[in-house]
Image (cartoon, rainbow over all chains, first blue to last red; front, side, top):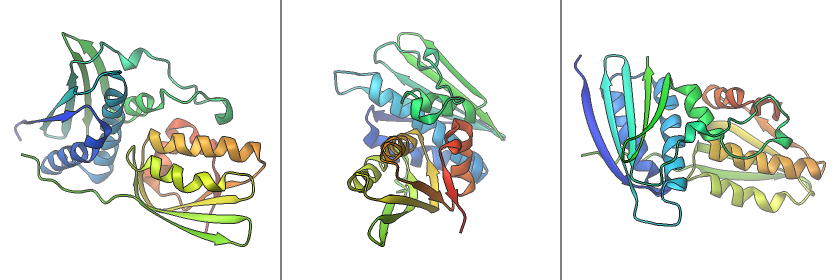
Length: 137
Length: 111
């Protein structure tokens, strides 16, 4: 099976989440991704996209996010690119999942989840924020 | 071109049990869009006069936004010495609770 690439551009706003789910779901179904893996990839994608919507364009509106998805045999790669404020979400503290929930700080949880469910989550900055994640099944 | 395949929006039903307990039934996906709706629904019952049960039987998905709503509710309920119980948690949702450690917060009721 050869690789298929698809691209979606969304306003960096959580309202675009349903479109993101539709895009990812459709491409994963075509690639024969099992339902449980699809659900985990959607979860990671939501966490990354919401993070971009909330932080990349803080204080300004009109930002957008380009999502490129490559699917091949038993594998999906999703890249998120935006021209917002340079920000590496992976550098920020992980929640301490060992301490009592009452004492936990809220935040950081979404990125933690994305890292847990995907095989690879990487960040780079090359004139824009570039978040790449991969999953095999 | 992406076909607009609309995911079903989460719906919430509730049922009072006596004067001081309420059950919320969640249907669908508790994502970032749905989380504020759950927050609005349970907020009036966080005043210390209710025990709350959340029935997850028909909940197929939860993200960190949903967990934050639950954590917020849990903190308030705990201060008020009230119970927040989750029941009928399905496997995909349980997986997220386990990986984040939220499972330790959950008082589970099997039924």
